Length: 287
Image (cartoon, rainbow, N blue to C red; front, side, top):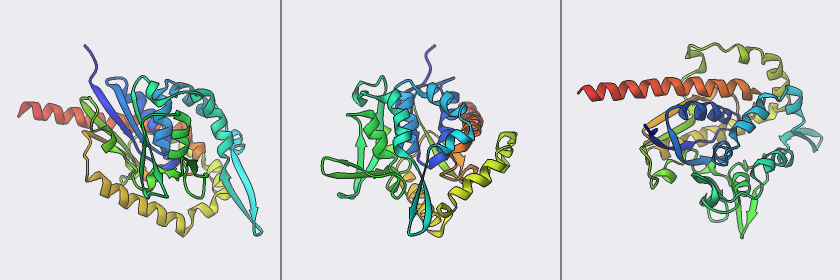
């Protein structure tokens, strides 16, 4: 018996997007993914799944120690103040090994990466062309990663206008649309699974947040609120069949050292949402 076909929508939200990996692992146990649309980290994870390299990416993340993560930081002095960002070129040097020369139109499943053209003030959907360039554009968070300049367009993170691009999957021939939202309101503490791995990261948390202390500024919080409002507004346009919500308090956008526990959390939360979905199906079948 063939598995039901799904279109998968992966939202933006920085480091919380590592949970997408666990969600995908759980979904593939009973569904066939025939299309993926993603914004920002969702475009990155979705692109690696589409090209068949997500397992390698997961292993790379899981084997990375905290000290290895620090190597991907970039320290700059500006007006006497030390600033810290992620080193985009180091990150993409690794990604290039998995995506080099890959064209989106040649992928085995349909793929869409969403970016924003600042010049024209509108969304850009990458559905053909170079996969790595599409990912670069979709994750180009203003002030963190440089924009992608392409054919007279200045392309930045798709989350500015569309954090959860469900609309990109509407034309797809699938049985269900599954969307993974990284801004869930339910607190992570309300879930009944052990958080031992997150607890062991307390020391790393203190060190990492010292690097990024300015990122938790009023401006960062304001931008986060703005993106959440846009997300809620855009969700009213298209409702997915299964809407998985990863708690927004499980990690800040820059806490990339939490990759391993976030993957496990994604799997667990997907399990819970699928259980609810099957219960609804069972109940509706009895009516």
